[in-house]
Image 1 (cartoon, rainbow, N blue to C red):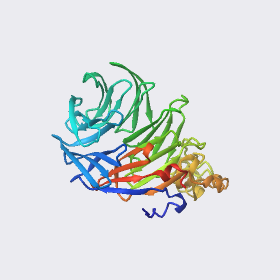
Image 2 (tube, rainbow, N blue to C red):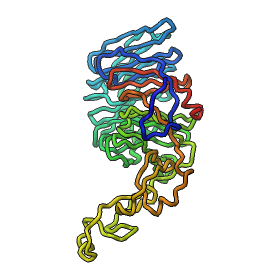
Image 3 (cartoon, rainbow, N blue to C red):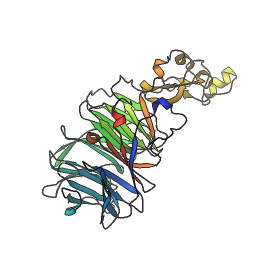
Image 4 (tube, rainbow, N blue to C red):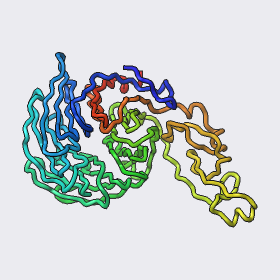
Length: 404
């Protein structure tokens, strides 16, 4: 399928994806969908209180619908054991068992997990833990074998995103204030490790690189942040290419690529195998650090220099505080995560070469506002669901072949 990328994206940076199926089974917003391995199909949950299990067969579409007592907000399909966990608006989590052909579904148990809407959930087979977060500000983990609650952690703000490292048993909880709580789980106890602060709005999604111990967070502030957890030096990289809130992240350890989706309709693949540079901190000053003219709040200097004050800006390459006249140029800075032109000071601009502007990301227009993305890397498939009530199944083999 061929689509046109928005004008500010170079044509050479288009990612290659092919639309396989367009599914319109739901009557309301599709909150989440997961790929059924080996069947070219998906299982989804929606605001219409129906879950659907749609299998793409050679002869057409088979669809199994199951009704739940209230809106479903999240799901987690553990493909090896065919266990499905569905988070509900009333705070309960329903566990289902799927048949071998994925045409039958059986309710196993319900977990009275939260007092409000389930925002995200994960399952760890190594520990048999079911982890969940809700609008009640709690992170809770259950023993899935006994259905027993093991522990709970109260957050200061509404929980919005969840990720878990199975090896270290570290949980990462994003919240509505833009913070990420990192805690270590030990059966029925926990130990707070640190709080990561970087987003200016709600954290919408998280992804984990288990090899290099990197945490990726996507926010409503349109920014993706890469946190170097394993390095323990506080190194942070930013990735800026989306024009609206980030909704899903997926990291490929094999290909060293991060895939992101957004409400701006775009899907971006970021090359994380290259040497990226840490985003410089912005320096605050009362004067332009290039021409020494005062900023508008520096009343005394304005009077002494007999001049009007200027608005403060920042160079994205060096971080200096500068006025508009001293930062009249714009440039992409892919190694710093800027895939669209940003402000740079006149001194830094002359040092930027064409090689520095070579893009490290590829873009694709999905043609719908994405609420959730799920990837089956082994079969090179992706499913996206959107506010338009549509589910799209994609062939993404072109993403993992160096874009060729």
